[in-house]
Length: 177
Image (tube, rainbow, N blue to C red; front, side):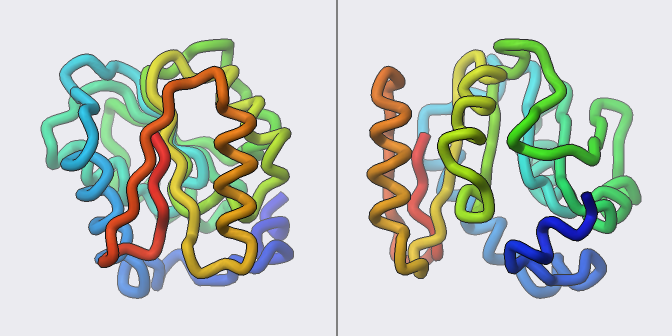
């Protein structure tokens, strides 16, 4: 299982992830939580699919989120790095986004930040919708040749959900909530 992400083209060592992408990820989180109407006071359970080294967990804690956070990644080195800063209100799981090991509607908020392009979109979206109770955040890397097509596919597959999307020039992703 640990090699699947590398086959899909994500070959950044966990130890260097914060240095390479930390600031970029923080800009995405800021854009998501400052430009949306997500009230963290009403969020008890968060699932971060493709959590990497757990940067979203850190950001949510800084915003005062005291609910339970579960980070899920398919790469073992990411999970091991994230566990270095694990707190008592979190868990980190090595698993595949196409087969989420959770009950239906288990999470108030599910985040998929710059990961969707690495997945089988239809299969993973069905799983994400299944485990999401209220808020699903998906960001799409803008620089990909198929970004527009991917956005349209997500919009079509999520047609029964209310969807807000926004694009900020200073971040590399299109944000869908």
